[in-house]
Amino acid sequence: MIELAESAVRTKFSGDDCIRFAEGLIGFPECKDFVLLENDDLNPFRLLQSVERTDVGFLVLDPTLVAREYYQVVPDREWESVGVTNGTPRLAFVSVIIGRSPEESTGNLQAPLLINCHQMIGRQIILTDSGLSVRHPLV
Image (cartoon, rainbow, N blue to C red; front, side, top):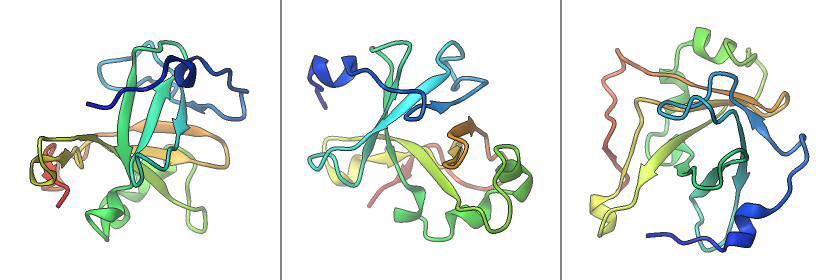
């Protein structure tokens, strides 16, 4: 279990720091604005923290760390839905569950968060025909 200091969650963020998910995230449609928190103790993971609700945060990981060609699996139309086109940097995260051991830790490769880092907008999608798992082993 990862515990965060309350002060880390209460920090004020400017609009430039927030990633806007207009549709919210699955299970949390009311949470639209998130910040991505980094900490050397969590590396390579990051915390995607809701600005609206301090009790909503997700441990996330760049999916290319476990599936090298992951970005190519995501259809172009999905990237375009957040304004990412050819030549624009692609950035995605997947939520992870840390198990009792590294072998029991998994990532949800089927429901990535696509991010347009220039416009600071994102969208969660579902890759139904990808053959990817919601519990993909991280090691």
